[in-house]
Length: 154
Image: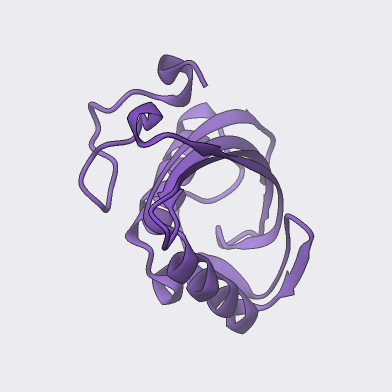
């Protein structure tokens, strides 16, 4: 299975890869998202260590049960031949209707077929007021005219 764009990355293909990942995560479909990773992909997500698609699906399922109205923006930080560094922010509300914003960085490593084989994520979050939300597009893919993290001032 191949997931273009493929390494080696340039700025344009790294940005394409990031947007495809963002769109996948904004779908909140764990099975769809997991297809972007190798069968034995390893993750460090906060303090959780995950290995393989089954564990990815389980973690994402738990995540999106807890993180309601999830909206994510990703932005390129750096890239090399088969690695991409991303910064991101996302907003969600919990089941008590409290809003949160999370910020973080991810380091991605891809195999020759464009599947991610390693993901290292560092994430911090804090409570925000509903009036402080920035991400207001309808659930799903972020519209192209929506600001970037830099444009949001994040």
